[in-house]
Image (cartoon, rainbow, N blue to C red; front, side, top):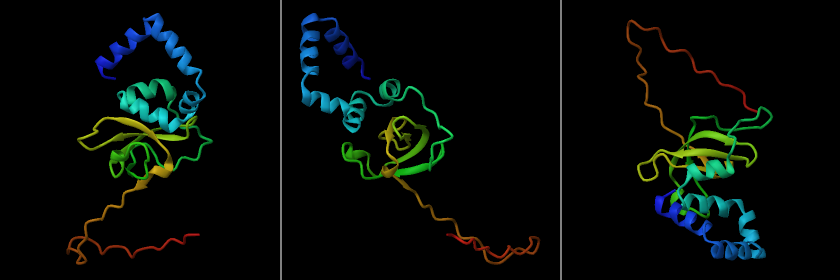
Amino acid sequence: MNPGSMEGMFNMMNNPDSMKQMEQMMKNPEIQKLIQNEDFMESMMNMMGGGDISDKMFNPQNSSDENTNIKYEVGHELKLTGLKTELNYNDQIVKVVGYNTSKQRYEVEFLNEEFEGKHILVKETNLYEIVRELEPKSRTPSPSSPPPPSPSIDEVN
C-alpha cells in the first residue's frame, strides 16, 4: 500500500467523527452488498496496493488441500483472460504461486515489467494455458547418436 494512503487511513481511524461516519456508512445495505462481493473487494485491494494487503486480509493461509482438485501447479505460467474488473490485466502472463482453498482462487504473480511482482487471486476460469511452440528437431540423426524413437500415441478418453 502506498504510504500516503496508509497515513490517510490511520488519520481517519484516529478521528472519532470519521469513525462514526464510517460506522453509519457500513450499515447501508448497498455498502454491505459491495463488501460481500469478492471481485469488488479484490479489485479494491489491488487498487490500494495489491498482494501484500489482500494476502493478509483475504488469503491468511495459502495452502493446497489434498482434497481440492487443483488444475495448475505452483510455477505454472498462464495468461489472464476474461477479467471484468481489471481489464488491463487481461492477456498478461502470470505464474501460479499458490492456491487459496477457502476462496477457490489461484494466487498468481505477474511476470511482465508493468505489473512485475504483483500478486492477485483469480478464478480458474480466468486462466488460459499458454501453448509454446517447440523448436523443430533435426530429422537426420547424427552418425554418433541412435535414431530417435518412434512416437508413441496415448489413448485419450
